[in-house]
Length: 177
Image 1 (tube, rainbow, N blue to C red):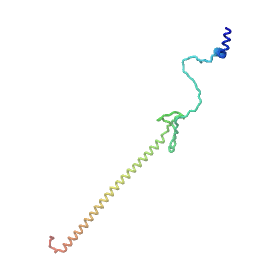
Image 2: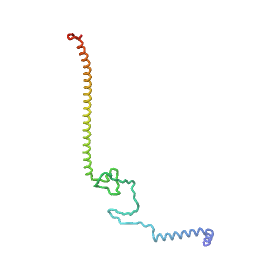
Image 3: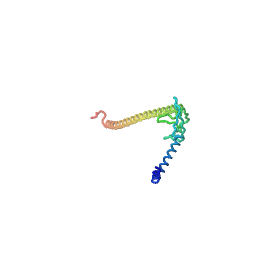
Image 4: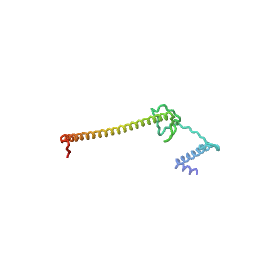
């Protein structure tokens, strides 16, 4: 048997060395694993209650869309009643800022009053213009009437002059034909 080993050793010595190295490596790896197992599963005691876990993250958040809002420059003194906090998410239709409208309502009422007064003045001016137009039409019709009357009087004078001329040429007792 010893000779057989010697013969195998001579023929396949590299193969035998490789098998021996593999066996020794496996045994040493197993010994290390058994002495200090690398796979450790963390465990904890289970209790009923609220689960709270804090995670600290670092990074930078940016809004997908940011819009700057500004009040009209000629609005006067505006007092803010309610405002959404900076950076809050808002949707279309959400109220972002609410102003005190008392002064604006007063200004609106005064402006409406001034507008109604101006509309009344316009209506009065239109009525006066209609009256003036009617008066002008009346004056025009009177002038046409007076003109026609003057024409009739003129033509009457011609006829009267002719009649008077004929009467003067006729003897005093004769009748016209």
